[in-house]
Length: 67
Image 1: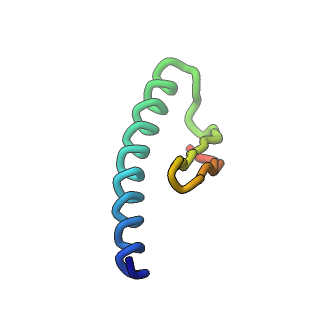
Image 2: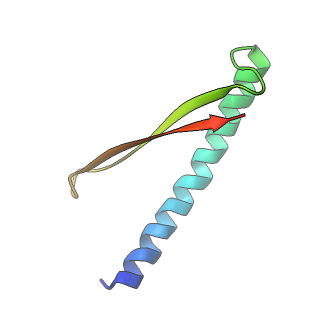
């Protein structure tokens, strides 16, 4: 596999993950605001874990979401 094919394959994977993750986060944030668990203007921390047993990959990335 050449570098360009690898970039395209990883990009395709990340695009799929990004779309699904954004949808799920928006859904739970809306619910949290509606139920009063979270307030507009608050910040929250979220994490994403990337893993692959075959590649011995296990990394968690933390970031803040500013509402």
